[in-house]
Length: 267
Length: 267
DNA sequence: TAAACCGGTTTCATTATTTGAAACTCGGTT
DNA sequence: AACCGAGTTTCAAATAATGAAACCGGTTTA
Image 1 (cartoon, each protein chain N blue to C red):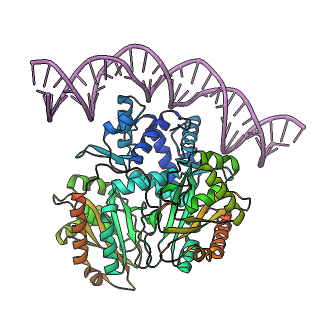
Image 2 (image 1 turned 30 degrees about the vertical axis):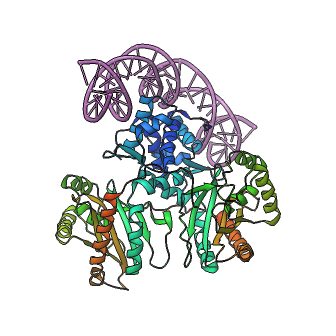
Image 3 (image 1 turned 135 degrees about the vertical axis):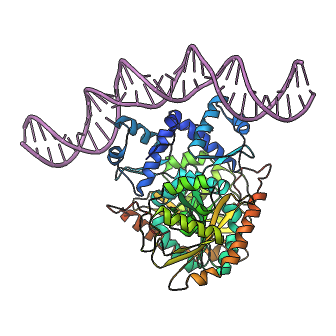
């Protein structure tokens, strides 16, 4: 678990915050302590401070900690300002309506795929996904297309960090297999998920690149093997490409108003 | 802007994070400095640290900072674990389908309403576009019903902090007017927004209370004066009440599995 | 052309905060 | 009555944060 560069006290506190978030359920202090490098009083004080600050929530009943509501407020601002979501929104609305299947918008965050937005079309697979959720990069359509177009140095670093857990029989199970697949994707300009993450779930994915070729994010259309097949999904490539280009265009022109009232308007 | 109790370095850094988020647009260092109590190098180092930690994102092009993607990841965990959203989800899905109008789920966060989830009658879930957004408590349906059933001491504190900005001609413009309205709401068990926040927008709201009467959150059904009127919305009271009760029941039984794999399953 | 200016960045001695071993509290065992 | 484990507090030593001042590179002003 290589630490980034631990910037002082703040970095350490945020490390603890991450630790709590990683559990995916409320945790007791002792559980954190067992997994932590910090001595007991140090960890204790971090948890106290974070709780004071509403970055953690404490349940006195169960004596557990979980990520706090303040994060929800902060994340709204992050989502609106630091992700592709606001620019992409109208385009993925249109895409979703046109293809009638579930659409995902994702960005790369460290070595993982971070889902930024999603549209469920008509009668979708009840698949459980949401904005803010993270997934593996090596076995999702969006993950692979982003890796494929990442600069070689960064790509190498990210590939290094993949775990290659075999979710299904089709999951790519080694760095070499992944690298071969990425070369393929670079060739075509888009990629598939061939039931590599979940059985029965397939998708076609398109990178969103700047004119200079830098990766901004990725788009995908997801379906099931019972409704269609890879050839069927491939038919969506032109509209995906067009949507990606529109997002690129808008992202590059994206500029913030000189003055934006801080007043909360609308809901 | 009264500081809570400023817990050391971490508290100060988070104060800066809040400051950036409050802008609602990317900000320059100098703008932050002008508004900040911190000396230049101190503020500079906080911004540096937060950026390193991906809590802020730096745009070298424009030389601006905005809340970072790490928050989106963390907030997902917060939303899943520390809010009513996961328990309420199936119930507001059903409610939304039944009433065919926009449904909101909110909680009280400090003196503000924090929107936790929402369903658009036509289009489904659009995650943090609304969730995470904050609004005034004194002029929204959900805000007023939560205040009405808050314990008197907390309610007084919150009322104290309202600004009573007149968004529309119908906005309650004083603490006294608000207190009278709250008494009314306590009487009825539910409340309305009579175009108090936005012209043409009306809603009926229902508190979500524990059996002991503690406020957990609130639900509302929103519509427009062109489509219906208050009497029309009042027809939704029984189903809103039923939904609120179901959420209460589930929230009280809510318990986390003993062991939950950390593996990312599904998307 | 020089001088002042401005936003951003770095230095470094001073100061205040963090740190963690140890010790303590409080329920619940043994 | 002694023990145990989870959580909490103490306090001197170690460390990290602090901020006045100075610096840098680009732009405007005199």
